[in-house]
Each structure stands twice: as structure tokens, then as C-alpha cells.
Length: 612
Image (tube, rainbow, N blue to C red):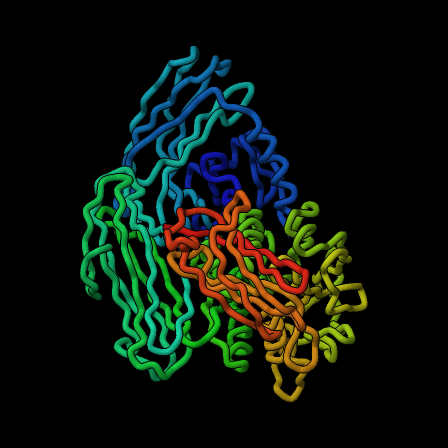
């Protein structure tokens, strides 16, 4: 929820009780709230929920939305710092409206983001400070100092909250102090596909997003290379835009909000090995070396770009996917959300295919923001394989992603079965019977009903447990049974992981037909990269007996700005390249554009974003 609503709207503190991270202020807070059971969540000191479980977010969200809908009469602003050794904060409390509370006090709490792997843990608190405000425009300024007598294992932050201490007892306002030392790397494209001997080029913007002058150090590394390939075979370097390419660290002195444009490149110097390498650019704050920003770029040489998102709360089930990919001859960039955070739209849209597993993790982690990013990715012509037992049951009700993209009309929670049966004639599952007794148990998988363009491709005793959908240039495979529970034995083919994943990727890559007598249908299969600068590739499928094929680029007003294809094409896959120019050879402005593919009286569309 904090990711959905932001720390401007939702501030959290985790007060530990009766464990090794309890502090006196936490004990006092538990006594004040009359904590009767653990865990307990207290919302603005006016409503509490005792207990937790798989549906706890569905209980919390309505309360949070209700509290967010009540305006506060006070604004809190602050500046300061906190790190190993200590910190200081100066906070200003300003009345924006008339205040009826007569006994308010300010609390100042240092929180740590990973003690022990728990966010928002309270580790230090200052003595409360009385705050008296009554008329609009009144303000009070308070400064507090902290001694930090331990080595933090995660980021430290300071929370300020203003509470009324007598009838009614309520949190009037809360605030998270801005970080004086913070860096960011804004990147439009995180992956690319190149052929043997080519060069991949990426751009990123370094920004001082803190509130203090800072010296930021930038360094580069090759984090992952195929076996037998060295860092000189596939060579990575970076530079300030217009400068010289280099591999050694550089320092940039930046005021708050200052930016530097950087370029990163990876050059294939050997031209004989296919696979993927990961080049990582790291920026580190000089004021607080714990503050870093990292951008990792995956370059796929003579290989399709695949992003594997391991969203299973650190259980490590991504290894099963990696093995199945390798058995099919694919490379992938693995993104572990526990380590890297939530993937954004720019990350997803850089890849031809996204494989997303929640395995036996908590599907509540797959947030509304994630759904929005996935929908935008699909609108750009992406391919998604989502395997999640509890995604549907984690939702309060239907969402745009469930209704409009998966085309699911209803579902039943937690009715998993040990078998998933393929649908005869389906190109992925037609001859499959999966015995789901390996890895993650499928007992809490959901069953669903579909309509529209979605086709059921796996069923079980409780109902439908798998689907595929091809619409408007994108493709989705969704399974409610864990991929990890499928057999990994080669002798179980076709009922094993390698066969299942290989068929999914074949379906992604070959449109709706293959060269075995199957009828080809018109489709824009994918656009890569998207967003792009300056060039993108549009992969499409030409139907049988199509005659003349046209591919045109349109602006948001529907006007044709570029004609890319106007010719006879054989049935099957094809690729066109757009360089961001119009028909007059003039570079077009940053913005959204649409590709329209027409043949045989049919049309297909997809959306692209040009960034400059």
C-alpha cells in the first residue's frame, strides 16, 4: 500500500514488542494503545486490527483509504540527516486550518529498513516535544538530535508525527524526513538485442535527489557474462554525454536537483558467442555511502531478450525457471524483487518477454502499480507469462488487468489440485497432463472462468487453471498452478518444465501459426525496444494470401507520419525498423506513436513511445 500511495500519504512505523528489537519507546507505545495481541496494526491511533493472515491487506486497505480521505489541519516539513553515529532533524509544524486539538505533542522516531529484514523498524526515539497551534498560519519549529550506537544494516530514516494526547487521541499528521543524501539513475531502456559484432548503447540520467550538495561517484562493472567470454571479449564502458569512454570511476559534484547525462555501451568484440551479459552502473553518495542508485543493462547477443521476475519473497524458485530456459537454449535477466525492488514500466518494456512468478510468496506484493506497469507493457506489444497461485485471491475484487487483459469473469480461491490437464488442440498444452507434485505445492491455487479473447489451456478438478490470450499485438499466458510444481525430469516430456516453457516462448515468438500448415494470422508480435531512442524494431506476422502489406506510423491525432512498409510479403514473421523519422526524413518529437499493420482486409495496432 505504501508503494501504491507513496510516503506522502502513508507513513509506517514498526514497533517491536517482546523481541530483540524492542525499545523503550515501543513498549510505551504498546501500553498507550493497549495492545492485546501481536501483530497489531494501529491506524492514526483511532482504529486497530489485531492479527494478520493471507487477506490482511484487504482489511487494511479500506481503513487506510478512509483515513487518507480526512484532511489534516497541519503541514509538517523538515530537513536534517541520519546515519551511522547519529543525526539531527529540524521540523516545522504549520497550521493550515483551525485546530481544535489542545494537547498536541511531536514524536521523532528513527526507523531502519531491514532489522531483521523488516521495514520501518523503530530503533531510536527522541523525547516528545509539546506543539501549540491554534489559528491558521501559526507555526512551531523543533530541532532534535540523535545518537546511533550501532551499525545499521539498512537505510535509516526519521519519522515525525504529531499526536493529540487527550480526547480525542489521534495522529494529527505524519511525515517522513527527506533524505539529504540521495541519488537516482533515470533510465528509459534497460535491455537490448544485438547481432554478432554489434554494439549496444544505453542512456541514463544521474540526479542528486537529496537536499544537500553531494559528490557522487559513478562506477561500472560487468556482473554477468556467458561461460568462456571475458570482459574484453564483451567490453563495457561509460561516459558523460559527449565525453570519452572509460571504465574507471568518476566523481560528479552536484547540487540538489542537478543532473548529468550518461551513456553506457557494450561492444561484442568477438562476434561468435550468443547469450546475455549484464552491465551495471552504480552511483554512490559521498555524503552517505549507504545511499546508492544502480542501473543494470542486459545485452542479448543473437538472442531474444527475456526478463525473469522472481517475486516469491526470497524463496529462490527462480532457479527452476533458469534451468528450464537453459534447457531450451535461452538466456535471461533475473530480477529478484527482494533484492532489486519492484520492476517499473521502463524495465518491463525493455524486454521481448517477461516471465513473472510468485511461487509460494505473497501475491499481495504484486501491487496495483505492478498491474498498471504490466498493462502498459502489454499495450506496447509485450509478451507475459504470469504463474501465480494467489494472484486472484489476493484481490478485493476484479481489476482492469483481470477483467480487460486476462478476461477473467470470476474465480474461486484456494482450490488447487495435483493435476493440470491440457486442452486438446491447444498449441501449448494440447498433449499435456501435468502432475503437480514437485517443488511448490499447488494446494492454494485459484480456479477461474473466462470470456472474450482468452482461451483456457489448462483445467483441473476445481475448474480452469490456465489461459492464453492474444490481442492487439500482445500475448499473455496465465497459470494459477506454480511452474515450480511441474516435473523437471527430462523423461517426463512433454509433461515437464522445459517443454512447457519452451512451448510458451515458441507461441510468443511465432504469432498464431508456425510453418507446419497452420494458417498465419495478421499480428504485430512485439516492438523492441519500447520506449526507444533512436531506433526500434517492429516484429509482425503476415497472414497467408495477404497480398499487399502496409505498415504505417501514426501520431496521437491519427495522422500518418511515416510509411515503413508497402509491398508484397510471404506469409510468416517479418521485421521492420523505424528510426524515429517522418517521411520527409525529419526527426519526430518525444511522444506516443501508433503502428498500424494492414493486410488482407485486416488491421493490427500497437503503441510505441519515442524518447529523446
